[in-house]
Length: 139
Image (cartoon, rainbow, N blue to C red; front, side, top):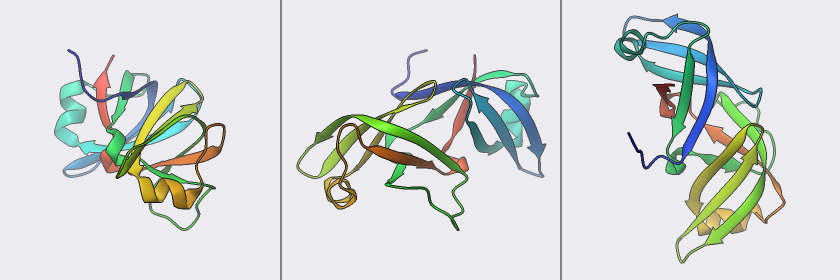
């Protein structure tokens, strides 16, 4: 299957914490970072997720926020540091490609936000991803 989701990071499930309806799944990405996904319990069961399962974490580019430095006191669990390798600014939106250990992420943010953050190729950023915005696919 081919997907329009460009952000696909491979990793291995390290923990699954089931709840009544949803489960949290901790993934160790191949680049060494930890990522948390909150998915339905039904999806966990259908995918057969358990520790040591190989997965791909999928995140739409519009669901990634950027920060110019680490953020504390925030409910967003996934904060992946990286460096900007490409910045394309359109009339209203900007596409930011970020090199992170083990791969690349693309974030689409407003042009105003990119300008306010002072983003530039070679600059460091933190990709912020809510765990509810991470989908999982088995490898």
